[in-house]
Every structure is written in structure tokens, then in C-alpha cells.
Amino acid sequence: MSFALRPDAVVPGGEISQAERAVRVDLAAAYRLAALNGWDDLVYTHLSATVPGEADHFLINAFGLAFDEITASNLVKINGRGQLVGDWPEGAARPSVNVTGFALHAAVHAARPDAQCVIHLHNTAGIAVSAQKHGLLPLSQHALRFHRRIAYHDYEGLAFTPEEGTRLTASLGNHFAMLLRNHGTLTIGRIVAEAHVLMATLIKACEIQIQIQIQAQAGGEVVSPAPHVADRAAEQLEDGGAIEGVIEWPALLRKLDKIDASYRD
Image 1 (cartoon, rainbow, N blue to C red):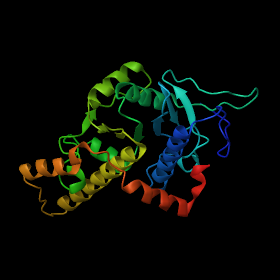
Image 2 (image 1 turned 135 degrees about the horizontal axis):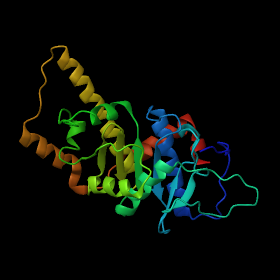
Image 3 (image 1 turned 135 degrees about the vertical axis):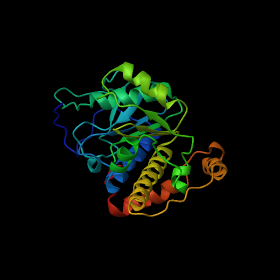
Image 4 (image 1 turned 30 degrees about the vertical axis):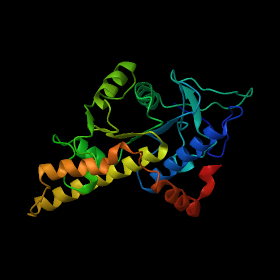
């Protein structure tokens, strides 16, 4: 799809609540952090967040903007059918939303009401590990966060249809992280911060696994934690189901503010 929205454009949409404004700022920050970490893939992949108090509405990036161009005000609000939500002045350019991005994110938001935020990325290490038959191995503390707590979904091509969305969410189940085989990574969060921190942990785990495998090929001996230790560590890292990212998020926002605070615009 082609689209003519400028990065500095404010997407029309009428008045927004303070709660929506806060989610917009957090989601824009998550996009900027993804770009800063090198997790972006041209203008593809997406991060989305539900709008507080508005059933069936969520925010997502306008298709064609790079992650480092996303701001709180140029995020697009759409409904579960992929339709733009808001008041649009006559003659105003309407942004496009990536069809595959909408299909995937809409399916997850519909199936998981607890998911305020959904992050799907095409990061190199995540794709590499997703293509390994055994998937993510319990080789590091980062990986143990997902020990017996990660889903897998086989590659089916580009996700255009509601039918694949149904299969994908069935694969996800009640997990907060998933490897999409030969495709990428996905995390969800009860707040934006949680989805981001889980994604950062998952990507780090995949990067460590690839590095360990390289060392093993060079003759290095790999040491893995005992199964009972891995199980105990996973329970400790899950921390009784507490929402993750609450402690880290303010520090990450301060980091962004020092670099470029325009995500708040």
C-alpha cells in the first residue's frame, strides 16, 4: 500500500482522553526503543496497544513510517475490522495500515483481553532460533524466563486471513511470548512496558543461544542447568505473575528523553 502521511503529521481523530494520551506516549516510546536497539525491519512489523475505555479500538503505526519516526500523535487508531477511527477533515490524507500487521495484531487483541500491548518483530536472532527445531534452549538466565513458558507457531506465509489469526492465537494460548517459525518474535503485555521488557529478554536469550552454538561448533563445551534448577529459576523469574517492566520503564523513558524526546509529540 502507498500512503502520503508525513512523519511530522498529526493524525486527525478528535479529542483524546488522558489515559489514551499516556498509552500513545508509551507505545511511541516502545517504537523508538525498538529502533534504537536495531530491532526494526525497514517499515515492517508492528507494535500495537489497546485504547483504554474503548472496546475493540487499538493503536498501531501508520504503514510507511519508520520506527524512529513514530510519535504519540501520528499513531493510528483502528477498530477490530481494520477501519480508521476518528474525525477526518475533508481532504486530509488518510494513512494506510499494513494488512498483515492488522490481521495478526487484531487476532491477538481479540483472543487475549489481558494484552494491552502486542509486539511483533523480525529480529535476526529471533528468526534464527525460531528456525531451529528445538527452539529456545534453557542455556541462559534470559532463556529461563521462558522455560516451558513460550509458544511456537509454524510458518504459513503472510498472515492475511482471520483463519490464520485463529490458528496463531490457538498456538499462543495463555503464554506471553511466542516464536513464529521462520518469521520472528511476538510478545504481549498487560502494559506496554511489559511487552517491551519481555521482548528485550527474549531477543537477548536468542542472541546468547546463537553465540553459544557458535562457540560449541568451535569445540567449546556447553554447560546447561539441571532440569530441576531450570524449572525453579523459571518460577523465580516469572515472579508469581507480577506485571513486568514497571521498574525498568521509567529509566528507559529517561534514556529516550536524553536522546530525542520527540516521541512524546
